[in-house]
Image (cartoon, rainbow, N blue to C red; front, side):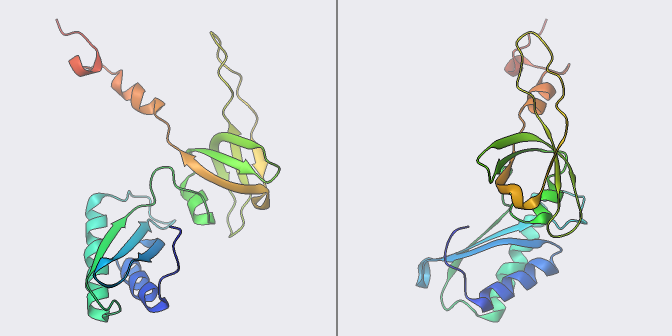
Length: 188
């Protein structure tokens, strides 16, 4: 969310409402002015929450943020409130993001200019964890690729990174026994 920082009081009100709803404020952007003010709030689960950020929870936090902003009267005019999650391919910018991405495929650009794509296996505790990534070997036509050994990365070796959506799992689900005409299967 690359806009100017919102007023400290707006951030304080929004963060208190998000935290009160049991979530973490992942990003806040206030843009425009007057009646065209837009408040964009990105929320996420905290490390201890093994659940999912579903629409019900987003709806609950949206109401909480809206009520808090209205009660605190920190925005002088009407505003549009947009609340959502950082998205499936979110950038991994803080240790909490890395810990929540365990088991997922990540793309990591290193400070030496190289790129590593692999499954994030392990993240050491602390604010500057070491990361263990198992690289995804390139496909070899007609043969199964050998698994690559895990790579341990120091936090300061990472330039930037993001989660990569793995659509292979979706394709595998579509190949199950209940495939219908839309899935390309014939019905007799």
